Amino acid sequence: MPTEPVQLLIERLGAQGDGIATHDGRQVFVPFTLRGETVVAVVDGDRARIVEIVTAAPDRAAPRCSQYGECGGCSLQHLSDDAYAAFKRDHLAMHLSYAGITAEIAPTIIAPPQSRRRAIFAAHRANGRVAIGFHGRRSHRIIPITDCAVIRPALQALLPGLHDIAAIAAPPRDALTLAATETLSGIDLAINGASPKLSADVRAQLVQAAGKLGLARLSINGEVAMERTPPILRMGGIDVVPPPGGFLQATQESEDAMVRLVCEALDGVTKAVDLFSGVGTFTLPLAARASVHAVEGEVAGLQALGRAIRKMQGIKPITTEKRDLFRQPLNQIDLSRFDAAVIDPPRAGAEAQTRELALSGIRQVAMVSCNAQTFVRDLKIMLDAGFRLQQLTPIDQFLWSPHLEIVAALRR
Image 1: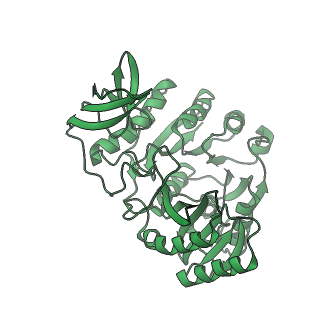
Image 2 (image 1 turned 120 degrees about the vertical axis):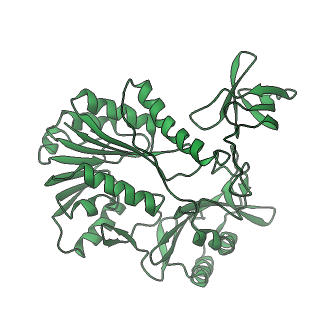
Image 3 (image 1 turned 90 degrees about the vertical axis):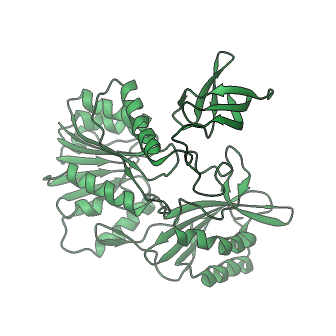
């Protein structure tokens, strides 16, 4: 049960960005605080809610948007720019130290505000009304978004129209998600959670509403319902039409930085394998200088890559393979055909595939990750096998959150 308000001294920031204090001999996590601050807070278990900031740290900054503190998307807007950049670097350094790895970390590349080109909004129908926005902090409550400092202006401007679409598609009880992506040819909207038994009339209403908004494409539960024009992303100078709701890097700026670092890490190679290739974020740029074998478990991503390849000219050969790299990683014999690899797994990392890479004859590897903990685990496997870290670069494309993208260049 919550207690009476108590005074706490914030000793440091935790991995998720919450301040950490000691109360009654145990750690208490206090969101939206900074090291050295004295606060009055209500303690509930191992968490506390601020009532008053008694002494503010010099690094405290004003929030960038009016929903901060309620919206669950951001947790670090109260840090100054310098303190924020240091937190991101220290986040990676901490995980490296846990594994006993000493490495020089390059300056963090930080994406600019209002650069996130894809947002997943939640919608819920209750008491005859539909709410749309982002989930609240540690809750399922939906917070309306009026001035987000993270998403692209085109996505912010889309919200009133998305409310109209949600009002048509939202089921009576369950939540609906609307993944909106800004592409070169317009907004690509993927609705998930709609009733699988939507009537033809309701589908027609959704298509009409999508046309009114000028959407490039509308998909419902993974099926394309309307395509005014193909939603185009450009990778390595090649136009790619991603599958509905398909994965892509959060910002164009961070993708450009990641591609540059991967290509530099694999400079001079002639035969590369792209593990967890997706729609070809790294495959297509690498093909300007080397033949590439793209391996991916999701068929929709490979199909999108295949369509892009058929339109390409003046590049090295690209081959594709559908394969579950968690259950069936490429082994040493499979990898013997290549002199380099790029590996960009999901947040869980790719321990089994990394062990095969470490044992193979491949000499140059670019490791890409969105999870510092699993990245360091997999990096240690490579270092223990004789690889050396050439460059380690944190990339912040998840602004004002504790998440971090990482690119590492390794040579045997």
